[in-house]
Amino acid sequence: MWQQQAFVLDSKFNAYRTSNHPNFRTLYIRRRSQLLREKSKQDDMIPGMRRKYLRIRSAILQNRYNVNFDMQSNSACSQSTSLMSLNKDKQLEIDVIPRKYDFLSSPIPTTHAQASKAIVGNSTMEENYAFNNVHHIYDQHSDAVTMLKFANNDKSKLCCASNDGTLSICDVLTSPPCVKAILRCHTGPVTGCDWSASDELIASCSTDATICFWDAIRHCCLRCVSDPFYSSVLVCLFNPINNNILITGNKAGFVCVLNVSTGMYPKGGKHKIGGQILSLAVNSSGQIIWVGNDKSEIVSLKLNSSDNSILTKCHRIITSPNRGAITCLSWRSWISREARDPMLLANCANNILCLYKVSENDGGSLYLKKKFLVHHARSNHLLRSTFCPIMSFRQGACVVTSSEDSCIYFVDVERESNYTVNKLQGHACVTLGVTFNYDETILATSDVQGIIIIWSRQCQKQQQPL
Image (tube, rainbow, N blue to C red):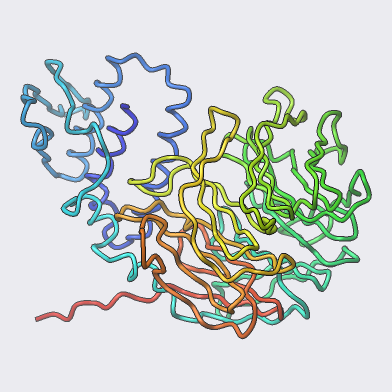
């Protein structure tokens, strides 16, 4: 695929971008990868134009960073027959005889992959995820904090949902870190929250059978909508493509689609799953939804692409014969250069963390890839997990999960054994919420006592000058 060729080309030059800001380099290459994957779904570029694009981009990057890469060094069968030059008007002139790009056929790195090593700073998986520094501890809530979420485009803003009936918005990077606002409107425990793509809205749901929409800047409630079945709403999630659509799941076993602007539930936007809906995940196109309930079932639904209102059931799987509740679902399109398939991560209250390979062309069907042992026996403990937000360029990929033994575990999902990369021991009781900010510099965790710990990445040791 030409998108993979473009991605590897960008990786070659990534070490030369903003040398003093390695986090920006990683974020850039991650965003670039996401754009190329989206482009692959609607690829209408003429084949000849693809080759021309790659050659032009290579010449621009070489001129920009004053680096001369031998484009054919990794392909013995290819012959270099191109002449590239920049004239005084900075217009690119290329005279090229067509040739094969066999050296770009696969982006999977080896242990000697220099571009990948430059991107990650030559650190190991354990060193990169050494979040051992406690940056701050919040205690503004009087009951369990069941969910934490950082804003999509602001690495300092954190939303916390608690069983004490309130939400809080924290700024973790001020000096000192502070609580910006306490949001009060619900009359029961707040079970879930989510940020809109623009970070202007926060949606929250509660056992009081309501969904509230908050102005994230003025910290006021804009609208409160009742569940159509007047049942406790246990989870809510914005559609990533259309933030005018909120997806909810309730205690009665229904998944509902809510129009944010009108506060109405469109016809055909309600689907009975069964059990209690505890978790939701949606893919990047916003068309496939995965639903987890308290009966150990994961069901995939398809959202009508024309009006984003009609839900159609596709597949159902049972994760465990012991019927452990599915307390959290997380979707990721591409977790590492070695694991390039879409993945779904599921916490099951049967002491397991499941990783599934997703077939999006088949209505979101799931195929079990691996299981990991995690202390999680009680279904009323809503343990969460998450993929690390920045795509891994190492040989491995990391996820983070909470646990009933009061620890936070970093798990390398590509390892066959000894998969625990790091373990954080700061809480004194069952841990629940886990979330990263978008550039992976801060990790937030919570527990059943309402304590929130903000962890910062451990600074790498700098080499002493000779």
